[in-house]
Image 1: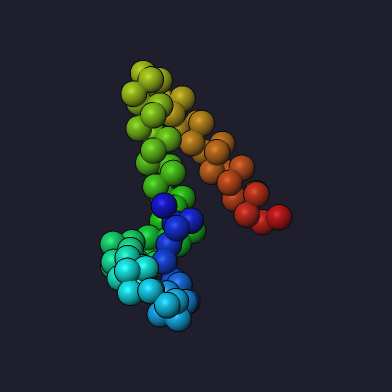
Image 2: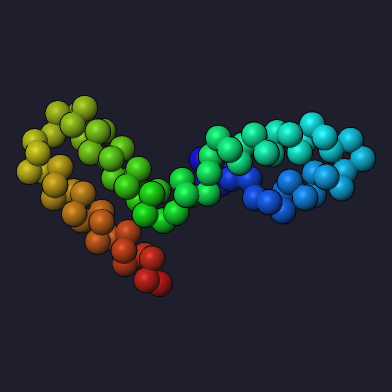
Length: 83
């Protein structure tokens, strides 16, 4: 999840803690496991869209409905971003 993405500030903060070696090591490990490029708007959108396609396919919806639903959701997502 991108909500928990580690930032260099978190690593610096862990370095100021009295026993922060463990926290710093964990923060650095998280940064290598989840690079910031995984948290861009485009990456999250693509991941969400792929998950939606997979869910609709799993439920047995026809492809034409899947495309219609995903195009509608795409429009809503972009409209929300413009606000």
